[in-house]
Image (cartoon, rainbow, N blue to C red; front, side, top):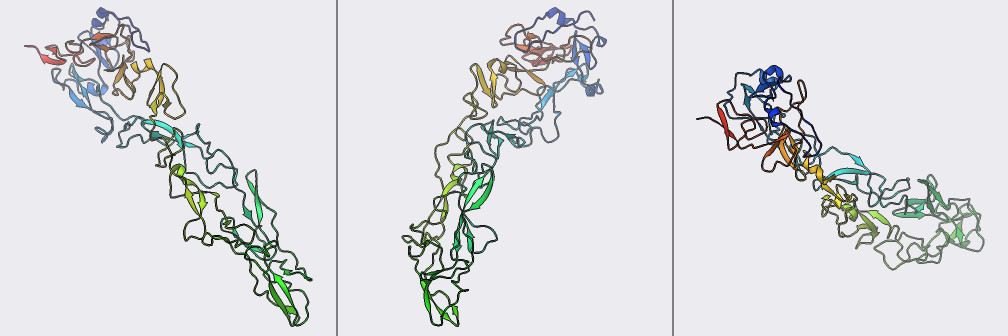
Length: 490
């Protein structure tokens, strides 16, 4: 070899030293070139192994042919497209300008060419703005950029040490009525209310470190025989003084309702008569009844308060709604006894993981490719950076980034590199000596202007016979480059 071409690579455009004369005489014969390349018109050109087997089977003067190395069925889908292959000394070159499937990213494109846009695999993330939800977040593609959003719909808060409704507080609003399991005297639940007999009353739920405890409930006790006042049902079985002795024909006032309810609201005492030495049932008493939305204006449960329907006004989840509108309050509705959950009304959307306008998209009015909300609502790009594909990048990066070459999401082909904001073909003839790997760095000394940067130097693709129409595409011995196309000499 008469001379060795030396490439000084740089990470940014415009840092290189190149000698045209050195490049023109880079090789004399195939033996001077690295494995996989051959010497053509004084420079080494890449010749793939697959093309070597076809040597002599293509015409060096033939026009380029279409090629595609991606999986069957992916060409023409999404960003995938065919490229062109050239014939050099009877052997086909690598496939230039093709775009084959790549891992899917959030960029509003079908990168893996499977027919779906932005179908990234689910990734967990931490919600860093808005409420901190115990169920965490998930990466979702929005507006061509990744967004960290709540990973599941909110649920009703319960005493479990978890922020079920995702409002930033844990186990709040979990207090309510309760009655110890296994005890007789009261039946029902905290939502519909408890119905109790005799002196038995519900207690209150106290939540401590995620564990609920029922305190203050009055459970059945041994029956106490009354003297003078209305007899009471201490053992909560619905019968008053059933174990007490009595005189035949004797009668006494009685009341089997909870303590403190007699004489309140609609509640009143009855009477019971002794027969065969046993007191009979308490007749004509009025006992407490559950408050109902359909019976407005009365104290049915005899606690001194009108229309205190169990659960009315408490927080609830409306499963028929989306977003923030799922969170609501139990309210009375016409002709319905128990209160129903009425969700919030939609409000103006804000840039956070909460769906305020309740359309299923928490950030539908915000540009996640904006420097003010790059990839997520809480990410603001520093000064002198731009937002590309949901990432903050230095402004000079778009001059060399093949995914954002010259502009956001302007991706180069699989056999191209980004040089000065333009996608250029990989120059197979550029080497740093025998056996060296192909180098695809943008290292032109100056801005090429209307010309192209092929590896390390500026060339005119319109008329340069060594780079006719594309970097590395050389015309045959009997051809010349006209208008970027190799034409036979006349």
